Length: 497
Image (tube, rainbow, N blue to C red):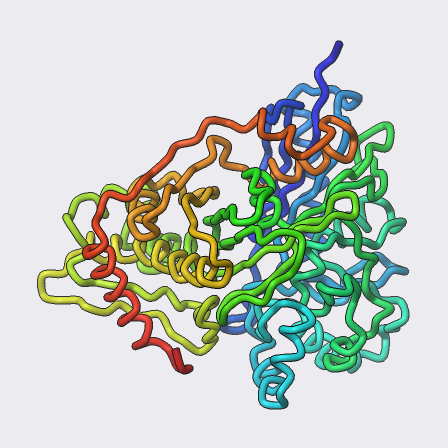
């Protein structure tokens, strides 16, 4: 009997990854194709959606060729994607009317501020679970329609379709037959009512967005359509769609209320499963839909940080303080403490729980004795502090004491960072052996859809060994470090803390 595989597409902020997984969750082969980042103005970020689709086909083709796996051994395709990033395209030509506008992009800030002044914040939060902020899609969709689409007489609005990146890829892969998304992605657009489970007509009216452009919304684990993906002789099923942060929560097997994960990437997403009903959190974090399986939904508290791994990248590429990201661990471990130095990495403002888009990055606490090692350590520590900010709000909102947090993403390879994270949370930090946990979650969803596993509880049996970090400092030391961080943040805020 020939081995069978699931092909997973992980379309992230920087690249499209194609991975082949075995039925036991092992990675057979992977292939990455990077796409260009566009910065037309300060704090504006765009991607070329056509390039992303072409890279997707290229990644799949290379993956099959390099792996030696025969086409007929691929059972299904699964998709996990960067969320909030969206594209609008013409369904008659199949071409985008503008570049994809990325979750990091701040061009909707003035729109959000204006709607906030008009008193729409409570309404939007009540319906969508989200905070009125340009991080989410809605304000940037409005900007696109107001600035580009309605002023261009050659564009027929009746021919337009909207989608987050998963929707765009599925539409292209199925040759325009399927215009769909899942609950995890829809709930991050700031246009979706998480209680009624439908696009909200009142919010669409507020943002002046036509309902006809929006995709169908469905569960994360089902057959969405079929594709040859440019290379297959026969159609294979697209068996899961799930946003990357939700996928990593699922890949970590955080199925029960009170379980939590942190994904360390360009930015970071911290999620806590709160069960089958939405709950309003304390100020600073949001409520989203984690996933839907067979009509059953799970909700989460979530907080998003703009710059975590990107902060270390800044040290390497922008100010050239260190030659590569790996060297940061060695420098941080070369000194006994941070020397009172703190970095608040508000390069794109501050996300949750502060939501201050005008905040600026800053170092503080430097003395004549400050060295490069202190600056690098401060950058790593800033990641752990920001995650503690969010975990504390989630614990307070849920009333659940957090015993452990599961982590994934490239920066989790940094042992200094993981140990410091455990120190600051006073909880176990559990690192998954498989780094590609978002892809793993998409695999699990697809496997449930095509019958590889009957129930999600079956997935506990194939979880990989993990490395665990526990706190090595006392409460007094922890409080001293964190007090310094909070003081540094207050100096950068332009809004009331």
